[in-house]
Length: 188
Image (cartoon, rainbow, N blue to C red):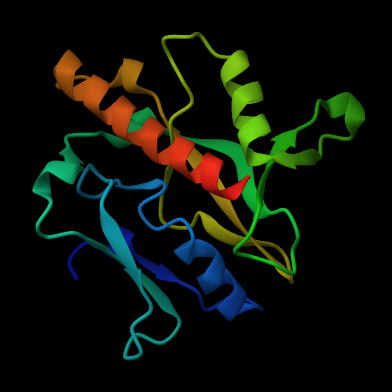
């Protein structure tokens, strides 16, 4: 595979099987961004090839070119400091929470809240015309602790994206939000 952004290393994970099960629940639910080719993938499969021991490979659907958005520069994809985690660490594939950061006065740590509630809280603090548009990039699958897998979220800032039409920008926003709402409805 030429696009190294779509091959993620799982070598450092203590509970690799748990991380694999966890990330599989996000297949086609969160869009995946590749900075090296400036593409956003909305239709893909996640594989764990036996010949590539301890690797996760994201394969875009080759029959759905319309589900890949081109020309999305790295400058519009920013880390958020937000993490999606299983609500119950012993059940990685069931309900989800999002860890919202607390102010420094509270120790600077985060507090997990149910995913759907957390997304509403995030969007309440944003302008209505600029919704929260989370995406995944290589390295976002992590371990919160030795038992709990988590996904760090990056965010698209479409207002800073140049070179695409308003129709293309709205289409990207629509797809990201549809997938996110589907994920929140199924897993909250």
